[in-house]
Length: 479
Image 1 (cartoon, rainbow, N blue to C red):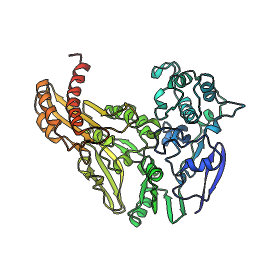
Image 2 (image 1 turned 45 degrees about the vertical axis):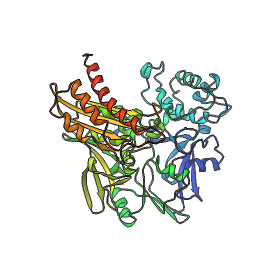
Image 3 (image 1 turned 120 degrees about the horizontal axis):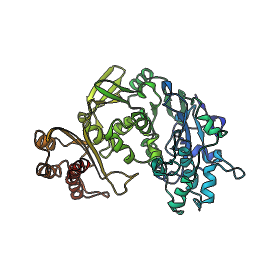
Image 4 (image 1 turned 60 degrees about the horizontal axis):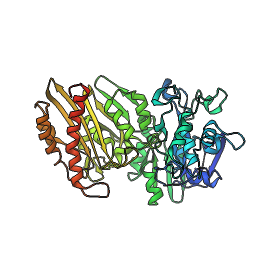
């Protein structure tokens, strides 16, 4: 196959003459849709944001309608959007008939140079169309969640007029075509095989076919949200001979609760998991807002974050603290591996050739006291210097079980096993916590780099445990 189809600004387009590594951003600009800008090519600035129609999981079979989500066009490979529907800033309105978001940005001074403005407009539009937005929620008069703009950077205007524009928006009019689209089922990503420039991109229809392909091409690049691989394609000009897209596989998009565990499909985006869990796993509720930006979370997956095996990934410490297992699948069958045994060395894992992550299984019941601490130069949308996750169960004032997941202090994410052993069976008091904090400061093999010194990382480990203890007492009204 050398062509496929997608919808852009309500126009059906046959895509021809592209390679498996062509990004959505470059293709849009080649068609004259230059509101989409390349600011960073890493998914950190939002100048390239577009709206993507995705199934709204609130209905039967997770396809109750359409949800408009903002995504980074610079990171998405074009063939991964086969069958998709996209709206750019140009598709929202025109100079003669501005979209409500465009109008508010203009009249409230939310735009100066215009380089970043289209991306802001798109992210703002995604929140404008969010179903269920109510007055007064999110500390906003119109219910607008200002964190919907966390992945968009402004280089000259200043954020106050942009926030003013966001908070001035009302509800979409009934005749608004994008609002009407929300009640229609979104088109599901279509299977595709694209061969060009001595490279192949393939999205199979189901997991069985995907595993057969992975057995045939064991070195295939597995692609889900593309928030990591897209950076490699853009910045390092990486190219894969065979790219296997697993983001739309139904078997990797399940979320199931049983009496013993909750299972999160490796192909679900973090935003989907956040919505569908509805606050039922408090530790993940603390993790998600600190995981990059909404633009990234709308595409990034747990499978991708674990598959890259980065020692500074945000999800591993939290999942280690929750005692998660990974369900791994290959053409030969399936097996489960504790996450604590999955990371074997720097960027290396227990995955065998032809194997992929199918899901993450979190055992139940959940721990009663949890916290996720991310130490970074910026509070949001930044890479962590240190990440620490705690999961604690008490019998009265005695530690029955504690798990501590750490990131950024070793070649892999790790458990603080010595500290866990030291605290288990001991009284949960300041004296024991202080002693354990000193031991925690010696965990791992932290390095000096441009984000933090080894000494600083060790100090943050110590203070993190003390903070977890103090905040727990504060919640109980005992301090």
